[in-house]
Amino acid sequence: MRLQAKYVQPVVMAGLMAFLMTAFVTWLNLGFRPDFVALWLKAFISAWPLASLAAFVAGPVTPGITLAILRAVERLR
Image 1 (tube, rainbow, N blue to C red):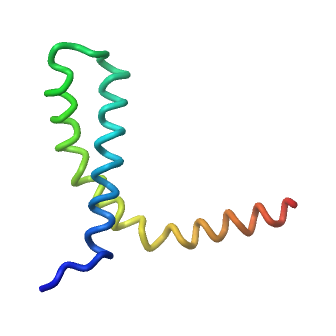
Image 2 (tube, one colour):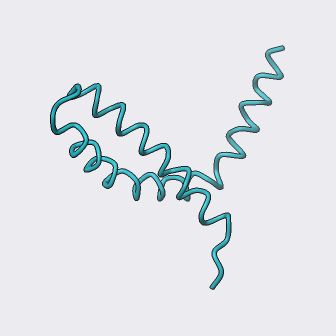
């Protein structure tokens, strides 16, 4: 089986977003403590699979939501 971009891209995007968001939220909640990196990585490892699942579930829905938002904005003009 050959990997396809439609399966890899959501996982990569979710990984980058989870990496940044878990770092930020860990810092907000705990500050820079001596064990910050260990706690951050623990949060990231937990968050990445969930973020990937969310990306796969939300992926097919988001174009319709985006179109609805754009149409609503156009009506306001």
